[in-house]
Length: 318
Image 1: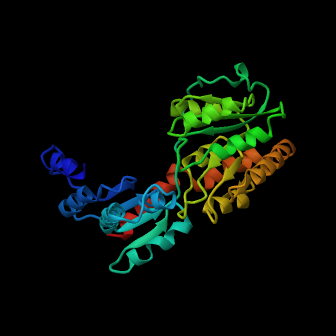
Image 2: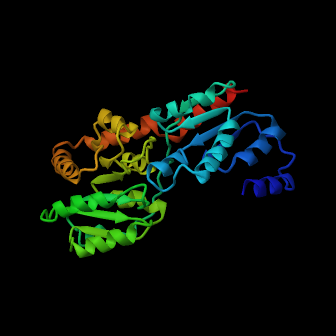
Image 3: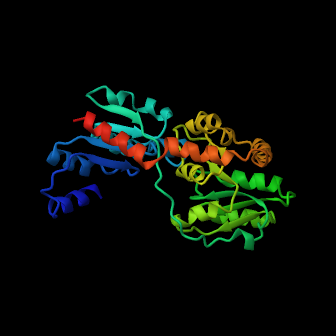
């Protein structure tokens, strides 16, 4: 892929354009050769935005072993890092991974939070008021449901809350775990659970306007830090969160410091059930929680703030 991109760039209309800086995003780890070409042609600083550390996380989850494939992919990722003057990671916990990368030459590692632009205003095709979850307090999960998320623990919580006719769980999206999750919910005859297909991003704010709590799931086997994009969307829409994340994840500190939800760092469904019950009581008694969510978004995750950080970094790397 990167060689194909480089070839078409070198033979295309942008060949003679001069760039002041190069900004690229990972995943994927395979952009290194193309960025190398751009750097040589333009002699300008470069900024790599990293949103997951691959292949390490795949090893943590047992998807990859430390064999030939792992070391090949690690070398590919290392070449990508080598092409950056500055690397922006999404949380403080990931800074330590790149300590050695900063030593050979003048390079910098910094925290660059995730960001989110103004939400779309499209009406939502999902109408909770017309579903089996009508008139309930809704826990919502919208996004990928795969191995890295392990969303199934929230079905355990839903099963424990099946007798609460005022509580419902809505799962929206796709992923390689969806069929198993749907089948399990049907086998358990959970009348408080609803699955819906993926919707357009512009519909998400209208969906969340019908909900009360956002769900976040990260497999506890992760050793790297991750601030999921859905957390930003929840905060932007004023939804407190119920999160199950890997131990010492920076998201735990953000949620607790901002007083915008509850977090479990274990694989215990009983603990997560207890936190869900506590959060139900909390959101009923604390009407200011939505305002705190929106304030965290404005302070930490706005497009304007992040763009300023990247531009300052490129200027200082000249």
